[in-house]
Image (cartoon, rainbow, N blue to C red; front, top):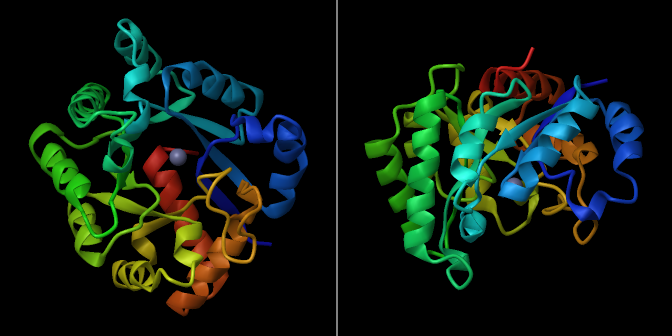
Length: 270
Ligand SMILES: [Zn+2]
């Protein structure tokens, strides 16, 4: 049996309210999932993410931050509260943070940029790795341009772990991949890699190589090809891993080992 890690999950989402514990106690171990990284990406999600990590200390680890879409939810005292929570041993990174111009109607651009800046400062203070959410709008890569600019000028990198961060939900060209890799970031690969129309993502990942990727579900969203329309969960990681290994022409055992090691090195897991 191959072992895998889900490097990006939202198991506290209400979509899992009916069976969260049975998933964590049975479904995940049966699928070979040894760790699941829980992303708490708005102020009301921070404590529940840490609590889930407390309930499943060997399996679940938290990542705390403010998703660009939730920048409006960041209250007056939240920034100081986040600064206090980040050093918690259950927390492994700052995320998911970044820029997403597909939701400007609910999260204005200037507020997103200000919040991203604040998150980068917390990254600098804590030296934790970053989990980045950067989303293009069709063929418009402005969010990438602006994010790379901010990272280049306002981020000092992360000294606490081998990798400085991850470009989560990688869904761009090799051009963007290369710029991310040059900053010491990994690429987070999920169901998007498996969709028929996304050949450009697969080509970019092939050029980057297995040494530069980690696997994620971003559940409950983005179920892989063959399971689209269904709720996604970390037990789909082996399926995503098989897609990636086939495309990269390598045994799934080797892909599992490489991506598990990369994920451990990113989050500083035992
Ligand atoms: Zn996410």
